[in-house]
Image (tube, rainbow, N blue to C red; front, side, top):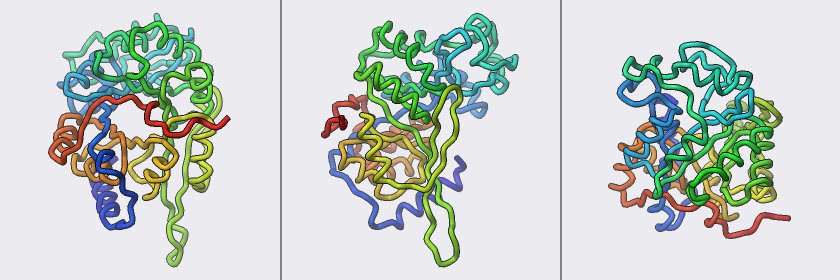
Length: 320
């Protein structure tokens, strides 16, 4: 998201005097997530390439209590750490991750695209990342694949030593989250969705739309007019722990989620002062490409940044 757009959103937030507030404790308690390990794309060649074990270690090493990685199911059923279904952007050879074996994927060079110092890095598996999660930190797993990936992801989680309180699963695909929740109720899940405002006319207030995915593989995109009460009812019915959304979102979202015992995460926030404003508005979790700057700004604003268990936040049990 561009700096200009983020700053315009911040200005809009500051003008919304009715924006939902939270308690002082809630304002001071926030999770910061290193986005894809905080490799920050090609703009920061000194950082390890995104979605590698090395990037995750870098994110934790910079003080981020949480690191996020993306997971796609390989053709032979192994959860591998990649953001795109094609390796064209971040590898020396372009292949379809979901149709390639682990052996084929691990033969790729996923480091030299960023800088020669990273030449030879191979594709990481979810199991390899789970094996290095620090005792006092957490891992956010974004599943890009459909519900068929739930079993292998759960198997990798149960095979690892990471504390379930130090894990969180997010996905745009509601069917994937349903399968995860059924097979692994111990791990918190947040439903990823994108919010967008569309101008209806000169005399009509902008209307919100919301989008997510469902179905196997990459899933089908669903976009519809926002019915916030229906969304929260669905989250509660499914036993999810909250939403993870775009910076632009309805101003009463945090308050309504908190009222149902749910949490709100926001991505991707690289302006430290925007991050502070978002937390003051009720956001519980900030995903960023620049953890050191965001953490420093939050700390200077008197906010506590640490890795706190998500499912224990729930004040209401999921509906039967």
